[in-house]
Length: 190
Image (cartoon, rainbow, N blue to C red; front, top):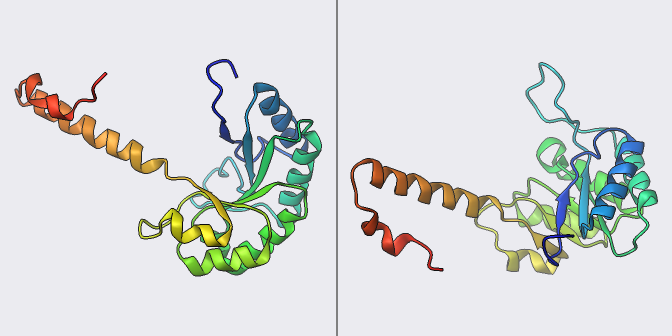
C-alpha cells in the first residue's frame, strides 16, 4: 500500500459477480495490499423492483468463497465469509450458512445484523473460526462478545454520525450569525 503501513480491511461486497469474479476480486485486492477482505452472500445489485435484501443460495455462497480462497496467493491475506442471514433467515439459517462457509477454507466468519448474545453464542457453537461482527445493538459491548470468539466488532457508523452531527451544529451556529470564536472548544487542536 502506497499511503501507509496500516492494515486495511475491505468489504468486497459479493465479489462483483459470479465465482470467477470473486476469484479476480481477491487477486486484485491482494495485489493492492489489503490485509483482509469479506465476500458476502447478498444478492447485489438488488433486482429491479425489489425492495428487500435477499441472499444467494448456500451453494452459490460456498462456490464464491471456494473461488476466493483459490484466488489467494498470499497466505497472510485473510478472507472472511460474510452473511446477512441473521436478519433475513434468522439464527437457524445463519448457523446453516456459517457451517457451510467455514468448510470452504475461509479464515473468518463475518455476520451482520446481530441482535442478541444468544445469536452469537449459537454461531460460535457452530464454527471454530474467528468471528467478525458487522453491527450489533448499542447495548452490546466488545467485551460481551470476546468470549464467543468475536475478534473484530465494526463500529464505523457511530463516529461518522457523530461527525455529521458536529458539522450540523457548527454550520447552524455560523448560519445563525454566531461567531467562529464561539466554536473554539469544539474544534480539534493541531
